[in-house]
Image (cartoon, rainbow, N blue to C red; front, side, top):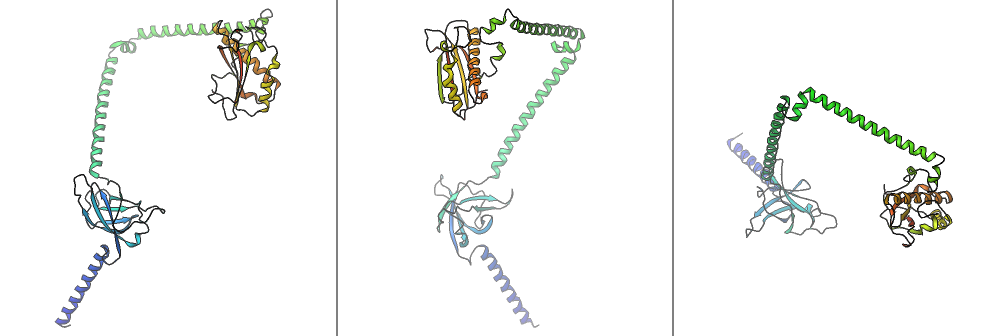
Length: 368
């Protein structure tokens, strides 16, 4: 090949390489494709440079054309972006631009999120919403603060450990009350004997209480004393709290039936029933109505012994409940009792007290 031919081939090859380079660079800068421009404003661009990538949904779709500083100190930096026309139907007015970094130390680029389908399309030269960039330096400062706090915590642990070691040494050498207990067997023996004595005393007390309870049960079964309990309408005080609840539900009642205790009981100080037919309306309502919980609430007058009145109201509530459960068909687990002791009577002059049957809606549960 002649010298002229070699020179011509070299020139042609150089032109081809130059054209390819121009084409590659131009395609990255979108010099040969149709684009449109968008803007986003940031307080800081954390090292973003003109020519940086713009990614839409993680795909390279444009480039940063320029970065403009604000006119005033309180203004924001404006980033100008050229984007492919094909992204025009993806980026909407509610899309968000953010400056992100490839890895921890990579190049910064602008990421734009997809907009919602119902949002309007962006127009050429529009400004879209932006979010503050993540600054690695700020993260490092926070990490330093966390490390400082951790070091302080370790220092405190060291101090506490030293104090515990000092205390342990004193105990081992018999110093202080605990040291004496640990190292002096005589003190330990005396303390152990005292503990055994207290345990025996408690055991004797428990035996005494059990014996007292047995004696009371025997008294209730005794022929001469059985009438004392029966005259008050109940056999055992343990039965009184079987269906009792601590308080009324907070739900508004569905229905309330109110009676003067004088209508239902034989004497002012007993739970022996009389004229229980007065309760029929309430019982029929419970049988015909879907309800969540019903409560028999009983109170006495304002005079008399408080403890005796509490037991009396519990017994009266139990008697009323037993009558309703025995004579009307409904779920007896839904009927509860509540003896209030002293309270306000329907008829204050009588001093007998009040009986209420309060019915609550179907979705109400009894307090526990």
